[in-house]
Structures are given as C-alpha cells and as structure tokens.
Length: 495
Image (cartoon, rainbow, N blue to C red; front, side):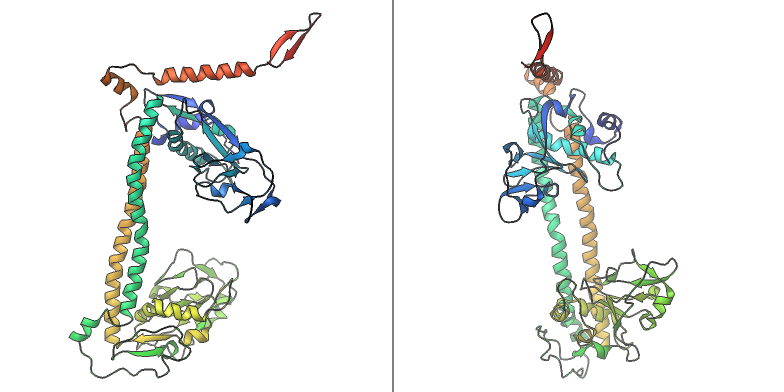
C-alpha cells in the first residue's frame, strides 16, 4: 500500500530532528530542485549473469554492484552513473548514491538528479534518507510498502543558501568519516572475539589452559587411553594431550542405560501447553536459546519417551545447521528434542559442561564435519557421533577447565556488551551530526558569515524566489500558444 497522508503533513507534524531546518532557511519541493526518473520495466527474459549491461534492481540500492545483467536494447536516459542518487521504491525505501559501474535503472527504482545551480548533490544525499524514513513510517501495508515518485517529488526539502549547503557537506563528511572509521574498528571486534573463544577452547581441550594447575595439583597415575584413538577413521589431526589425560569415544562417556539418539521425527503443529521440544534453531553454540521453543502434542512426544530430558544431557545438532552444542539446564527437565538434535546422556562420573566444551572446540567440529553427509541438507549419523574422539582429563581437572573457560568467556561477554553499546552510540552520533547539520547548527550560517565578513549574500528566501521564477518560465515555454484562424476561430499551436 502507498502513503495515505501528504508528505507535507508528515513533515509538519514530525518531531524527528532530521526533518528540522534553521529559521533562516526555506523549504522547497524536491520536484523544484531535482528531476525524478522512474526506472524502466526491462524484459526479465533478457536478464542473465554472463553478458550485457549491469542492471540496477531494487535489491542493489546501497550495494556496490549488481549480479544481474541485461542483454537487450535500451534508452540511454535509463543509464545510471557512479555517484547518481537512487531510491528503492518498495520495502524500506532505501536511498544511496550508486557506487557500482554504469548500469541500467530497472523498474521500482528511481534516480534523483538535482539542479546543482540550486541544490548540492551531496547535501541532497545526506538530507533525503531522513525524509524517506519518515514516509516509510507512515506508509501502511500488510505485505510490501510502495513509494510513489509523486510522494518523492512532494518532499519539502530544507533550502539553505547554496554556499552554506556546500560548507555543511564538508563538515558532515569530515565528522562522519571519523564515525565510520570507528564503526569499521567496532565491526572487526566480533570476529576477534570469536577467534578468542575458539583459542580458549583449543587451549582448554588440549590441556594447555590448566598446565599451571597440574603443576600445583599433581595427580598420581595415568588415565587409561582408548587404544583405538587415534584410528584410521580419525582423519582430522588430533592435538597432543597431557599424560594424565586420555582419549575416549563419546559412547564410552555416556550412561549405558540411555541411548545416544535423536528425537521426534515429525513434530506436528504447535500445541498450546504441549511438550516443549528443542530444535536445531534452539540449540546454539554452548547455550540454548529459549525464545522460540515449539510445544508439541503430548501423544507425539510420548512416542519418543527415550529422549525426554532429565537435565545434564549434552545436546548436539546433527541435521541442517551443525555446530550447536549445549548442556540441558535443570529447568528444561521434561522437554523433548527433535530429530535435528542428538542427546548424549552423560555418565555422572564425567563433567557434562566439559564434554560440551570439547565437542564445541574446532577439532571436534572438524571431525564431525568430515563425517557430515548431504549437500542441500547436511547431517551427522548417530554412529559417527558415538565415535567422536574426545580428550578427557581427570574429573577434578575437568571442573577446573570449565571454571577457567567460564571466567574467560565472561570477559568476552563483557566486551561484547560494551561493543553493542558502542555501536549504538556510534549510530546515535551519526544521527546527532545529521540533525545538527539540518538545523543549521553544525557550521555558521551564511547570514552569520556575511555579517562577520561585512559582505552581501543571497539569503535562502531570494534563492527560493529565483527557483520559482525559473520554474514559471519553464512552464510558460511549455504552455501551448493560442492563435486565431481565418474567420475568427481559434486554434492551439505548440510554441
């Protein structure tokens, strides 16, 4: 659905600081300072990925390239050059200068070309997104929102003097460059934290993390090792481990009275007050996401009573998205699991939290991935999961490993929390810079500078009158002339 109230009404009633203007400025309709060109409905049968001219589609607005090529005839006026401002007319009404190669303007994308005698192109690129966002917020739709070119043309843009527009752009881009540099550094942190956590696990599950602890807490004797580890099936290189540690297959670490198995094959429709059932989307890397757990009919869950959870089991995703592994907390006792999730009922003589850590480490994940089968929908067989080799320390050291990992992960979590706050602050800072720019508070106004320098200047009101005069002149040139025919009758002729 399209907009149901006027753009002017939206701006007049909005408290959004991005839509404000300085009192010395004027407002001007976008159509009076820019040309709006709607894209063309190019024939989709001529779309391809190999040859032809790049085609700028709505999905490409804000991107640096397009994967679609058009191999057919076209009118040059639909060509988009690098730097041209384009708007996606559906969805969230994204607006951005095109940074890709010369491309064709497809339907539901429009190009905005400002008259640079009156309106600076970079100033327009900074101003316009705030107005489009406000229009988007007031556009009702049950499916996809639609923006009309008429609504774009009716946007009452802020109109500072042209020289002031240019100074604002210089200052905005200087400040945003600093903010964007900070954003880029912040964007690199999640990958660093991910590597940190994996490094912690690698050290934990090879004995390096507790090397000092073993020196202070010597344990007599040597843990019995599984003679079949490593074996021919262990194509992934296994790390060296301390002499007091041992290799064991997963099956040897579980309760012999409970099977290692997956859960309910067909969950059926959700049932209110049914049995909560964990799927692969719920079992994440070392935690269970409880925000979207599905409840199923008890009669279906009872058919898979062997996978009713008691708390303390280790769950591993074995179908679809692999890599999920977590320990079942006590509050999830009585839950069931789906066929995408395997249950490892850990023997009480072992530390379940440690087993989850070692299964989550890169070595174990690489081992499982080497056994995964399928292309579109990958999966790990229960037989292979039972044979997964794990490095097992004595129980007291397992507990110390878990304690140290938890402490280091808490540090990473704290950094992640601060990172989230910093990203939010950077976004707010961007909005604050733009809001000040559009209210005339970022640089001295043209009026202020003229007073300081003792010179004349063209105020925004005079600029607006010049724009109106030129528009009226253009309209008069297009207006048909009336001439008299012989005999007194009139006819219309184009000038």
